Image (tube, rainbow, N blue to C red; front, side, top):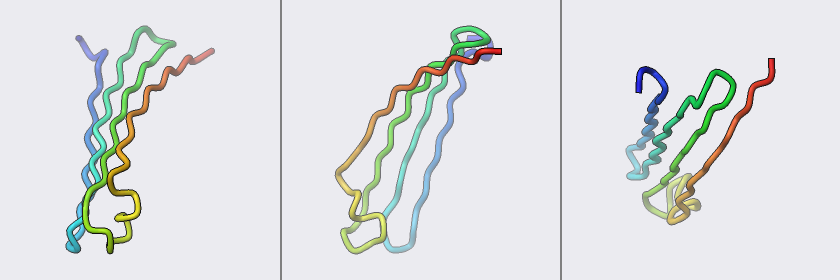
Length: 68
């Protein structure tokens, strides 16, 4: 897509057995409008510090308009 799609990937892991995964995809419609899709997933044991968010995956859609 000639630089119009920008993928990002974030992975966080701990020795206690929990991890967080967040892939993001940004699509530049034109110079002033961006569309962003993000998926957040947290997995691991209930005893870890991120364990309270377990089984609560999120999908985020965002549209950004830049006025210059």
